[in-house]
Image (cartoon, rainbow, N blue to C red; front, side, top):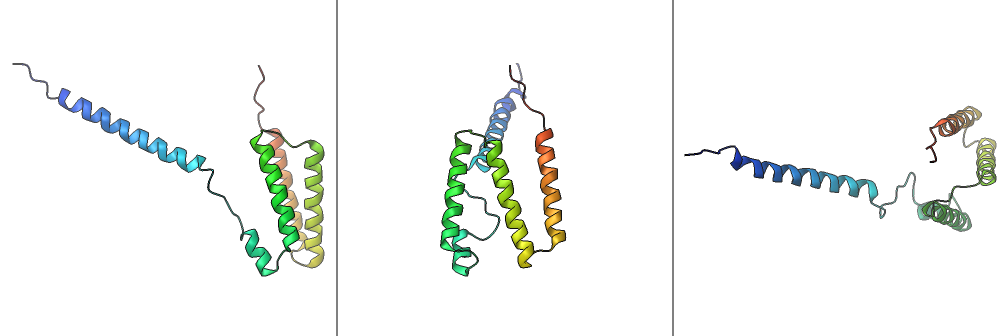
Length: 132
């Protein structure tokens, strides 16, 4: 008489492990690749227009810029250096306007500029993939 008690448990254990691993991978993939979700940092644009924080024209301009940038990103086009410099100049103008209006202090603006410089340096110093 041959006894094989361990063999009875092998198939169910493999099946259970496969189901757990596959389910976890599916959940993780859905979490990271869910393109239907939008990440919002602040209030939606419509709420800003309704509150009078920005005008409808500013909201439309913002939406068109974001749509253009999204299209370029999806086509894997990188912005040119001139485009990046224009964005930087625009950001600096907005920052100066906020300081002039008293919305933020000069120290806050300087802190923001230093953080942006750190991010830029970190981005420029990252390892570039080798081309073969």
